[in-house]
Length: 160
Ligand SMILES: [Zn+2]
Image (cartoon, rainbow, N blue to C red; front, side, top):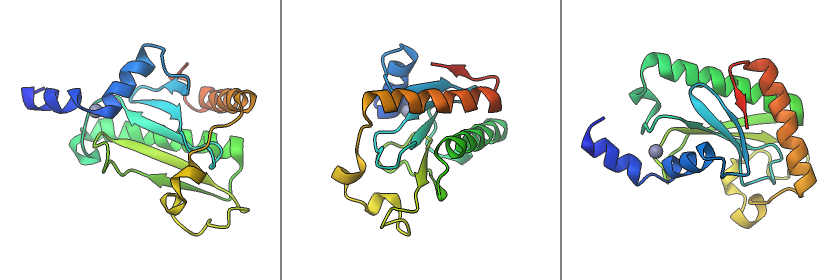
């Protein structure tokens, strides 16, 4: 890694978050996969919303090696399947943006039939509506249910 890339990673909010997850200091951590970390997202208006963080600091999918990128996509697909099995949504939304944090990460949002804004992108919902925590017992139940599916779909995963 070049010194320039080290400096970028050092300022990266997602790299900092990964350090907390790896240290066991992140309550919404779900699993460690070979190429990524899986966490429950902070916008539980979309119950079951998760984020997959690439383990390695990379700005774009195409800057990962082909093998790394494909393995990451396999993990994304497994996670999406797990979320779908647990939440039974009308539709899943996948987003890989990185405008605010340029470190490859994927948002997976379940969308539900009773959402009056279901035809819109998730981000059009005001932040104070979408950024919602679940009651603690529900949060733990949801994480456990996603972990159970991940265990089946990705035996290489380490549940957290
Ligand atoms: Zn990073």
